[in-house]
Amino acid sequence: MRQVGALGLGGIVVAAGLAATTLVGPAVADPLPGGTGPSPLASDARTRAGTVADLKPRLVDKPIPFGHKRKRQMGFYSKRHYGHRASRLRSPRVIVEHYTDGPSMLSAWWTMANNTKNLGERPGVCTHFIVDTDGRIYRVVPLSLRCRHTIGLNHTAVGIEHVGSSDRQVMRNDRQRRASMRLTLWLMAKFDIPVRNVIGHGESLLSPLRTEAYPSWKCLTHTDFSHRTMRRYRDRLRDRAHAQGVRAGPRPAWVDIGC
Image (cartoon, rainbow, N blue to C red; front, top):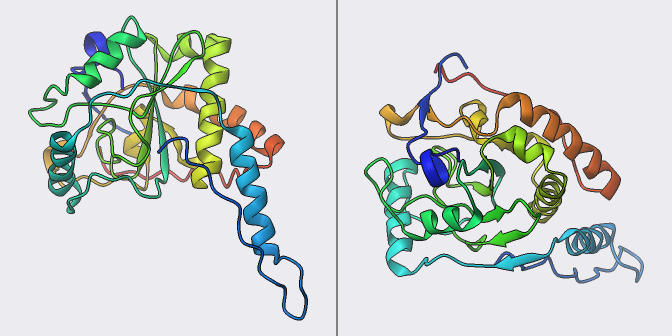
């Protein structure tokens, strides 16, 4: 979410040329036609549930205030920008990676908690998770709620913030990088999100899932993480997905929206 100061709220550029712990429960075994054993579908569901549970990283709960007022603000924001009023995040299809461009986890947390206007609107910015430099993963917003972290994708995206001043810094920190990938892989398994829809904030204009009702916001994005860094990130993530039996899916199919 590359921002000026903590979370870089002013770091927007116009592109040119371009509950979290809820696990999937065991399925009820349906009898096979003409038999008494479980169906392949039920077996696959149990396998996936087991994978999700096995992949879940240790999460430290540190929720920001997100009461009725902020939920209403998110609902009206969604109405303005996506055409429907909603504050709940249902069946997310995208995971967006950010870095804070700030000095610490707490500076990022307070920026989110303060609910300050961004681009003249509320709610303020937030992500669902913050990955600290020591590899600790903080859950700051429930996965059932929308967070304002990526223009055009907040209605369908989970946001992950990484404490750091550059994507290079994050990727060179072994503990932080491993924690990031484990968290992302768990979210992929939990919501059946393919690797192609794991993107950096700097790639948001290329996503075919992006939608934005404000013409003046059409080409607004940030620069974190870069396209180059995310290609390496996705390659590593794909290898991990194959090793853990998580669906990786096809390679990204980018779009050109004329920015």
